[in-house]
Amino acid sequence: MSEANDVPVSEKGRVAFIHPDLGLGGAERLIVDAAVGLKRRGYEVTIYTGYHNPSHAFPETVDGTLKVVPVCQWLPRTLFGRCIALCSYVKMTFVALYISLLAVFSSSSRRPQVIVCDQVSACIPALKLTPFLFSPRIMFYCHFPDLLQTSRSSLFKRVYRAPLDFVEELTTGLSDKIVVNSLFTKSVFQETFTRLRSNIPDVLYPSINTKLFDEAMKSKSAQKEVAELKLKKYTFLSVNRFERKKNLALAIRTLRKLGTCVDADEMKKVQLVLAGGYDSRLEDSVKYLEELKQICKEEGVVDQVKFVLSPKDDVKVQLISKCVALLYTPSNEHFGIVPLEAMYMGKPVLAVDSGGPRETVVHEVTGFLCPSNEIHFAAAMATLITEPEIKESMGNAGKARFKDKFSFDAFSKMWDQSIEKLISGPNTATKTD
Image (cartoon, rainbow, N blue to C red; front, side, top):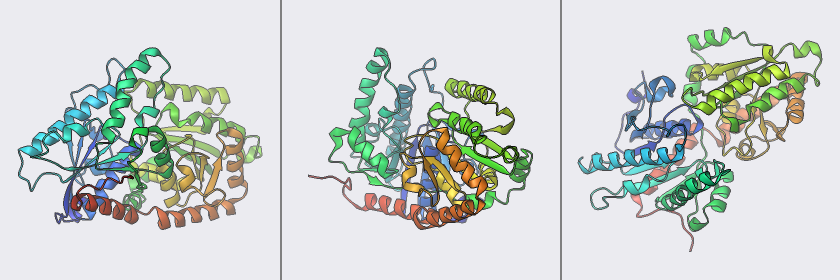
């Protein structure tokens, strides 16, 4: 039975989420968890999205737990492989217009009172077109400023991005409340959007749906699928989308370096599993996977690396349960949800010493924060292999830290309080004089 049937809606409030592409990434996981958390607390929740493929999506979005409304899926994601941001702006604006028009022609008792936008703020003006007929409170969840997530290596790119960057800052400031996923992102937000100095974002840490994890551990099909991988004694796991910015090559090169840190017999028992979202629609994703396979050949570790593309949630959970530790290789990650997943499962986390992981991983207590190079990562891996008692103590400490600071109940409560304030208050955007 889905959670949609487990929790009666008490009309505490009506919340709509609007998200560009409801796939299998960390941003999508956060939106789904927030929606589930609010629904458990009695809100009526709907997710509107520009794209939703049930075969490439989180289970709560397809099993009836959450109401998902795809809008304008016919709009292209790119223009001949380019202009991704522009297409996303256009698509999200169409989705916002759909919500506004739907609300205008619906009874007031069915209109969303709060709309949560994330990733693309350009749609916010379209939600404010009819203030006398439909005036929801707008919360913007900033995972990271979009203008910092692209290069400007050519004149064309600089000219193309200039108006988009201006629109991003301007429209972000139109929201009634801005929240971010970490103190790191908050500092970057304030340094980047200088025109919004009076808008002070609140930090609303992500969490994970622990009920989903507990159920996944009982999945016979997932257990069978993972068993077929024939994992070795010392399996290290990376869970990240197959994108260049995730620096998965570091994990592969670390595996080769590890061979100089442990004896040959132990090294034969070591394996690296690279699991994560893979989208064959994206040329960069396809090219990067091939590049990673080539690096495996160059480093001589082909037989010790397994690729698991777009695993289902229950398979991912089973993989985490079987690993020695999680390798988290991105630098300056905005928050990083996967370390929390590993901590809940009682696994040490080896992460790059920058960005969001500094707020989740406690160095030499719940894992290791390392410089972004294979020497330090390999040394940390060797410690966990040669000193199993450290692995156990770090895993236990990580689980305790998760329960203390990042539990799903705490996460849901914070969302509940934020939405409640928006519904009841005149304008709750936090500003300074």
